[in-house]
Length: 97
Image 1 (cartoon, rainbow, N blue to C red):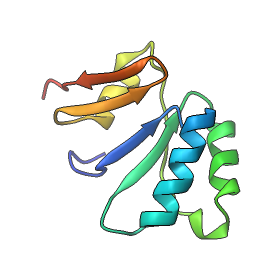
Image 2 (cartoon, rainbow, N blue to C red):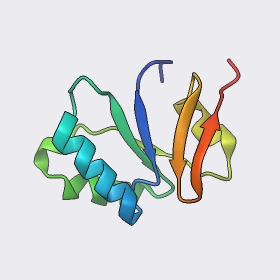
Image 3 (cartoon, rainbow, N blue to C red):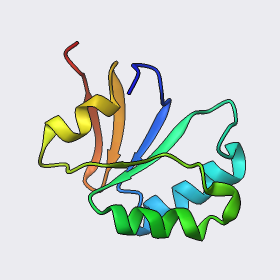
């Protein structure tokens, strides 16, 4: 994954609010708009369900499987200072690169 691959990663994309956010981002920016974004969560199967709910046009949506309790699994998603929305609020993350 390159350092600038995504502008936004929706971590928790399978949650109620995450699904709403994914729908908004897809409706507003699509897969190849000016904003590069991905959906992330713990379960690849549930992420696939979110992608399917967005329709056939979302087939190229990038999915990232990551666990909030395992920093090594999600820190590559934030190669520069970034804000992450998680169910308990906003968290500022800094990858040490």
